[in-house]
Length: 326
View 1 (cartoon, rainbow, N blue to C red):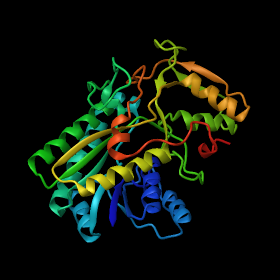
View 2 (cartoon, rainbow, N blue to C red; view 1 turned 135 degrees about the vertical axis):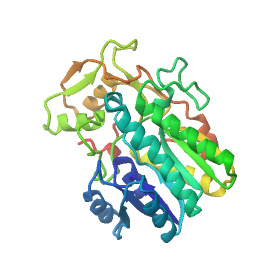
View 3 (cartoon, helix red, strand yellow; view 1 turned 45 degrees about the horizontal axis):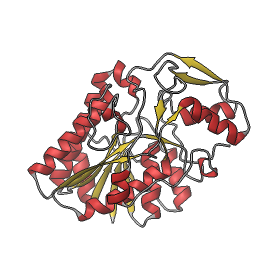
View 4 (cartoon, one colour; view 1 turned 90 degrees about the horizontal axis):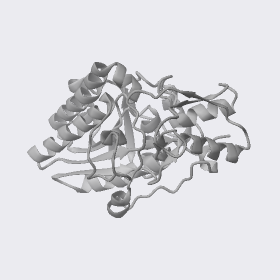
């Protein structure tokens, strides 16, 4: 069964590719390589010991996307394309609206024209914004505090409206919390650009001697130690969640559903730092910086719905061997 992954050469997309492959699907990648490069294709070929089929294409190219969908007998699409740096979206909102929201619209048009009407959409916990009631569930209020979060919420609404208009469609939106870690090979890391500020990769670089300290953005939040609280989910657990969602969406019609993917508990940045210090028996020097624009103080998930309906739950720990931190 052929599944198209947009943004498939990125951090999240490539880990989804591996999970699809391991579960018997035939994944195909579309990526414009604006925040990735073809070495990720080579890494996937090393891991799967098979040729990786990919197309260098922007999802906003409707005609090209329609041809890819038709000529490859695509059954469903997992959309993991899009810009993802919250602070950058605050500084450059038009860049995000043009790429993220417009990109989803153009992708859906191509899918409609190709008669491919199954999609799993990579959304974000940022749609919840500064939540007042925690943990957040799928019915929680959605008031994003960044353009990035707004683009995800807008995209969800577009997809929902399309399902309402055409009952042949089925869609699932997965609201990610904070993906960290790597696959067990240690190859599929997050190397997309210097602005991701992925705390896990920053910690790794300190431990590897590539940087002399960890930057912590904000120490004056109303939390136990002043640093932001996040729900960190291992990337392989996140990728596996897509298999559960895909299985459901393929069998469905006239359905739009939303699921949180997280661990279901909150950890401060300082607590995360200590987890890795205890695990590696190494000190991780840190420097406090000012708050980043668009960051919510506290965010962690209620994952009951995904557990009950998708039959999915995270199984990996923050500092276990599967983190490949050393």
